[in-house]
Each structure stands twice: as structure tokens, then as C-alpha cells.
Length: 343
Ligand code: GLU
Image (cartoon, rainbow, N blue to C red; front, side, top):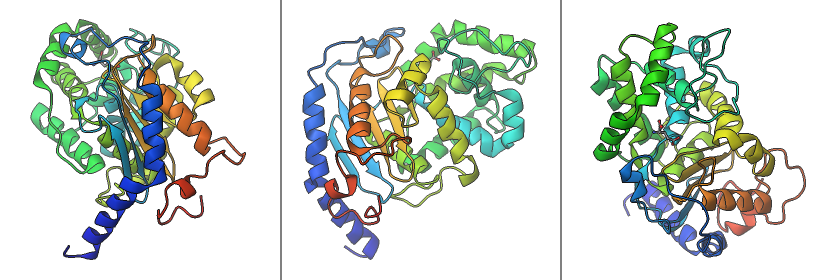
């Protein structure tokens, strides 16, 4: 131990390992592990290899404590979860007005890969459907594909505090099977909604979907948003504070595919899921949740992840519109957590 930062990190790790909240998460993990419903995504062979029993739950608080149980170090491809974070980078690169002129903020109720644009503006409806995500990737600046990808990877490092790799076989499969995304992109090119380096942008989109993360990373990404854009462990700013509200709002209205309304009603935490089995969920000012479990429901959301987020929301009062005293007080469960007393 050489400085107070290291001492605090050590003290936090002891707290996280022994806290009643960690035991609570272990119970939650044990409760939902036996669920056998749902199906692992199989539109490319690499995703079909996932073991349906993989299951990790991580919670990171805005004061930098991380609680994780189960398969929280196992990496998987981020897939659509990337869309929310790349949208933040596009806002930083171009400003809100320009981004709004290229990508809307309206939920669709349509499947994520629908070939549909707003009839009056020709914009994709929102950045969470594939059309909007490809238009958003198009807005990421850089002199070539390599530099644009590097800027994305640098951004994810600021959110998670560690370097990220691409799963190359997944990228190549996404690219070779991605004709529907190519069709969407060329439709947008026809309407002048994306620039003409569209093949480079499609590669960038397929690469961003193939970035490897784990459940712990997803909890830190959400906790960074919950903390106003600053990673609560490293202190690095991952997103300009001006755009945190934009990203988190879109997560609430559009983040859970076409069951976003159902999720808002039952869980309420702004969240984003991906077909790799991950969910990242934000409780602003409090914490971030990351879950990983590959079996998906019919809408593409991780079944165990939904159950975990719903139970955490209900028991700790994490729905933003909840005004009743929750059954469990988080500060009491996370004993020793500094700065949580006022919750
Ligand atoms: N890579 C996928 C696609 O573009 C995204 C899947 C997802 O929704 O997570 O089809």
C-alpha cells in the first residue's frame, strides 16, 4: 500500500466481499440460475456456442464499490449495448443539433433490424435500432476506419477502466451475414442520411458489436452514466456531462428492443441489452447493474437479466418513479458505503 487511493480501493474490496449486499446478490443468482426458458442467439455460429448456464450479476455504486457474483469475468460480445455508448460519442463529436438531424429519438415498437425510416424526415427513428445505430456509427469522426475504431475502443476503456478487444470471428460472421444491415445502410445513403464511406462505417458497426466485455464492465459502464459520465473508480470522464441525459433517456425509451415500454413499466431503470446476453442498467445518482446470461426471450432480452433487474428495482426502490419507501434500504445493505447515507 503506497497511497490513500490504494488503501481505499483495498478497503472497498474488503467491504464488497463481506457486505450483506453481496450475499443478497448471491441469493439472487442462486434463485434465477435454474431458469431454463429462452434461447441463445444463433443467427451466427459463434453466438450459438454460448453455454446457457453462464450467469453473472455485477453492481457498481457511484462511489466505486463493485459487487459481483457468478460469471462476471467471462467475456462476451457487447452487441447492441454498444449503441447507447457510441451515441454518446457521436454527440460529443458533432453536437446535439447535428446528431438530431440525422437520427431521431422516437421509439418504434418495431423489431431492431426493421428496414424503416421516418417518412417525413428520412431519419432512422432512434439510435438503438440498427438503422439508427449505423447512422450513429457514421457520425464517429476519424481519418479512416482504424482511427474511428480506436476512438470507440478508447471510449469504452474510459467507461470500464480496462482495454477491450474485438472478437474477430464474430466480426467476420457479422460482416458476412450482414446483408440486412447493408440494405438499411444503402437505403440511408440513398436519402443522404449517411456519408459515402458507408462500407467503412458498416465495418465499424460490425466491429463495435463484436467488442468483448464482461458483466463487471457493464456494471461500470452503467455506474459511469449514473455518476454523470465519470468512471467512479478511475475518475476518468467517459462522456461529456451535457450528453449523459440524452444517452440515458434513449436507454429508457428504446433500450430494451420492442419491450422497452414493458421494461419501463416494470423495472424503470434506463437500460440496454444485446443479443450476446448482456444488460446494462442505470440507476442515476446511485449505481449501475451489469448482467450476463445468454438465453434470450422472444424480444431478444436476457431472461435471467430481466428477472435480476426487476427484483433489484422492486426491492431497493430503483424505479425512478417510485416514491414509496422500498422494502430494502440499499445504504443499510451496503454496509460501510461512504456517501450512500442520504439515499
Ligand atoms: N450485431 C447485431 C446486428 O446488427 C446486433 C444484435 C443485437 O441487437 O444485439 O444485427
